[in-house]
Amino acid sequence: YKEIHLINRPEGTPTNEDFAFVDKEIPSLGTDELLLKTLYLSVDPYMRGRMKDVKSYIAPYQLNEAITGGILAEVIESKSDRFQKGDIVTANLAWAEYNTAKADSVQKVDPAIAPITTRLGILGLTGLTAYFGLLDIGQPKEGETVVVSGAAGAVGSVVGQIAKLKGARAVGIAGSDEKVDYLINELGFAAAVNYKKDSFNEDLKNALPDGVDVYFDNVGGPVSDAVIWELNNKARVVLCGTISSYNTPGEDIGPRIQWKFITTSSMMKGFTLGDYAHDFKTGAVDLGKWLQEGKLKYEETIIEGFEKTPEAFFGLFEGSNLGKQLVKVADP
Ligand code: NDP
Image 1: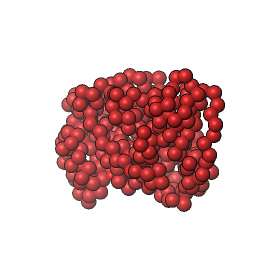
Image 2: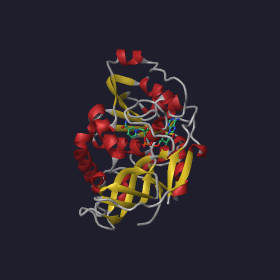
Image 3: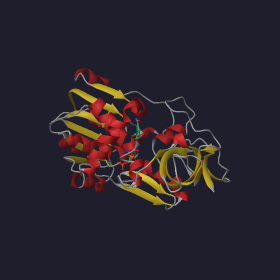
Image 4: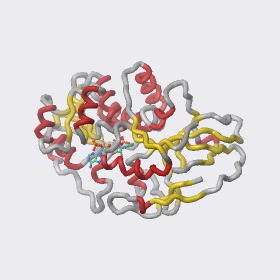
C-alpha cells in the first residue's frame, strides 16, 4: 500500500515535489493492535505549519516520514477485544491507505448518529475549534455583531452559525461571490462580503452598521486589518488562524493597529484547540444536539482518490473548498 511522506520543507507554496508516495508492506499485528483501512482523510491548514522546522505547539513533521492527520478508517483486523472487524474508527494517523494502531489510540465512530465524515468536520476537531474559540474567547451576546473570516471554510461556517444560535448577527468574509451567496442564503448569515473585490473595505463597512463586537479570525493579513478598524468598545478578537501568511516565508510582523485595541479597550486572544481537551465532551454533545435539531448545517468538499491528497491540501490555500475539505480513499 502507499503512504505519503514529506520529503522537502516547502519554501512558500507547497508543491508535489515536497511529497513522495512510498510503498509499504502491511505488518503483522501485535497485542491490542488494529489493522485499519483508510476511508477518508482530512487535510487541514495547520499541517502547513508542521511542515516548517520551527518550535510550536505541535512538533514539526520529520522529513522522509509519514504526514499524520485526522483519519476515518474501517477495522480490517483486530487483536483487541474492544474492536471488531467492520467497526469504523477515527484517529490521528499517517496519510496512508492502511495504518496499524493501538486500540487505545483510536475512537469508535457510531454511524447511527450522523454521516461518519462529520467526525472529521463539524462533529470533530473542526466543530470544536469553532465552538470553544467563539464561546469561550469571543463570548457573543444577543444582538452583538460577530464577524468571521474564512467564513465559508470548515471552522468559519460553524462559527457564524453558532453566533446566530446565540442571537448574534453573523457577518462572514470569504473569497468568492458563490461563497458569499452560500453564507447568506444557505447558512443564514446576516451579511457576507468577498475580500477579493476591490470594493472590499467599502462593502465590509456597509455590512457593519453597528461595528464589530467579536471578530473570529481565521486568516490574518489585510482582511483582519480591515475588520479591526471597525471594532466597537470592549470587542473580543479570537485568533484562530492566519492562513494568509502560512505560505509566506520571512519574518512575521506584529499587528499594525494596536492603537485600535487601546482606544476601544478591546482584547485579542489566541488559542489552540488542545487548550480545551478537558472539555471536548461538552462541545461534542452540544454540536451533536444542534446538528440533530437542524440548527447547524455543514458542507463537505470531497476529492476522490488517495493520490489526490496533495492536490486537496493545496486547494485549501486557493479556497477551492466549501466547508470541510476531505479526501475519499476507499469505500467501507
Ligand atoms: P478552511 O476550510 O477554512 O480552508 C481554508 C480557507 O482559507 C480556504 O477555503 C480559503 O477560503 C481561505 N484562504 C486561503 N488563503 C487565504 C488568504 N490568503 N486570505 C484569506 N483567506 C484565505 O480551513 P479550516 O476551517 O480547517 O481552518 C481555518 C483556520 O483555522 C486556519 O487558519 C487554520 O489554521 C485554523 N485552525 C486553528 C485551530 C486552532 O486550534 N487554533 C484548529 C483548526 C484550524 P476563501 O475562498 O474564502 O479564500
